[in-house]
Image (cartoon, rainbow, N blue to C red; front, side):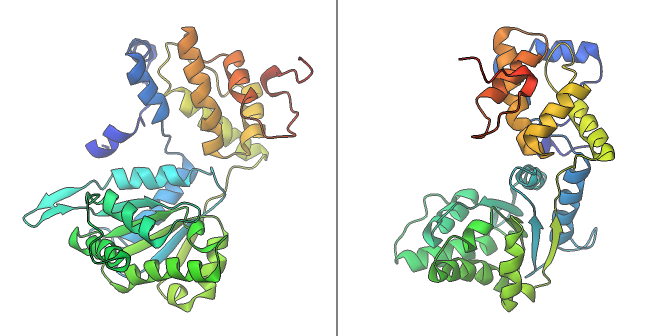
Length: 320
């Protein structure tokens, strides 16, 4: 049985039958929109990533959390890594004890050119200290934000898009961001999982202070175009379909739909949902009982990369 916290943040369960789908289709637009936006399928790649995070957090089932270790979950953008991170954090929500609020898992997403001050701001926001003052200067503010992880008894810090901390920066700014992560690891009170592109590996192995921290990694690979993976991809699309709040199924696992969604997404679930979600919204606005080919066509038409001339779902590129 799923923990209530996760159930409140994600729509993970398929509708059991036609009656359940019909009932979902009659919910308010905002409720149906939430189901589509928060739709999540725990398929094989998801489960592999989830287990890796869990192993870095709690290496022994029923034991205590890891301390001072650094792990990584690597893979291309839109492979579905962030959804796993968000779900894992939702499964470990804030609680209280006699000393105050506890944040066992903190999921922080970095950004390009993020500064140490911005990193600290985000830590404070995620641990309910968004109004922390800058008194004492920037250095003191950053140090206090890192120390707050100890105050709120954090067991695992997930750093999403962690490659932004170290790449496309000057050596000095990369060193400054590395210092933040190393300081947290040096507390020896919580574990860290860095999530992002494969090149994180290159940085970690160039820095003994990271590589020597029990560093371990899992690489998340998108499904390939091989026969077996395409069958799995079709099954995944069918699983998504059974969770959509429409009166009828949309036949997303139809071979034609499967082929075109795979071609657009490269087998990456994030890219699939970049089409399914807007197509579902278009279908809702049309009052349709399910997602139709024309809804998928319209969703794809505004999201194609420059130079992509494939006729997804019958797009005619010669029409003015």
